[in-house]
Image (cartoon, rainbow, N blue to C red; front, side, top):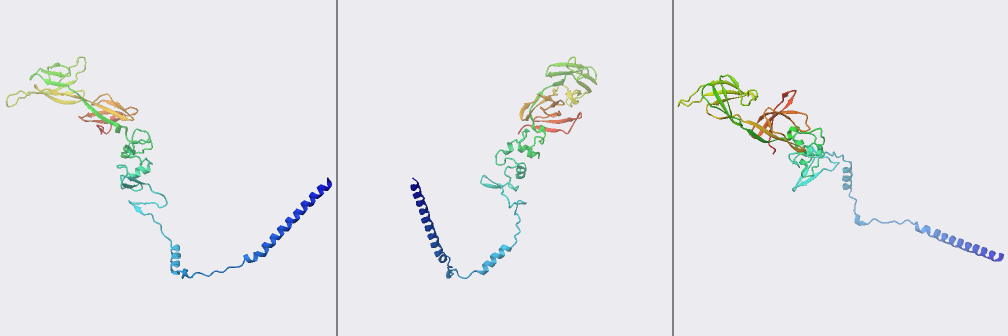
Length: 318
């Protein structure tokens, strides 16, 4: 058993010796060929290269040494930046540069207004959008130069107030007698009559109510043809309106009411209002007064400290 193990050791040692001799021989071979591999090889320039273009080289070096003044080109009276991209929009076959004002992409809004307020100018209906939710769209805010991105900055609420219709309430009076005592008749809204024994004097048609009218003066008149056209000057105490009743000629002291609608976020129809009446708008703390009612508009004024301010006209919605 011991002899067998001694033989294995001899075999291993013999194999290692042979491997060492093989490696040593390989390294010697590499050393012998190293000098030949390091021999310098010289090449001759080819004739087709020709002469070096010295003038072109000097010109190129001169261009490299030149200091260029990079000035932004001016377009539409405004420098165009060189270090960043410019939004160019193609619309209906025409290019629109958002950094110049002409032509405007979303007329009448200016490119500057769209750009400065970061509005969605790529949307064709950008004028109808309301990014701050205050009830006024971008076009309405542009027209009043308010901030479309702030609900605290918006046009007056009365810009959303519109005339809807005028209601006429007829009040027809006539002078029925040409001499004192005078008889005044009412045919609308209800029939009635009152006798005026002396002028000046007060009179009215509604029992239990203070006299609405005051007879100021009576003038006996006839035409050259002999027709009686006597006149009674009257004042409407309720409205301070003065008018004249002519014998047997109906006079319509019409009372007009106006119906308005308020279109801020939602549509609110206001109750019919007469000249001189006051009203308020939903969620608006101010008080307003009807100054006058025309056929297709109404004149309104804001009440401040109990006094009407500058009147403004409310028209029909476009």
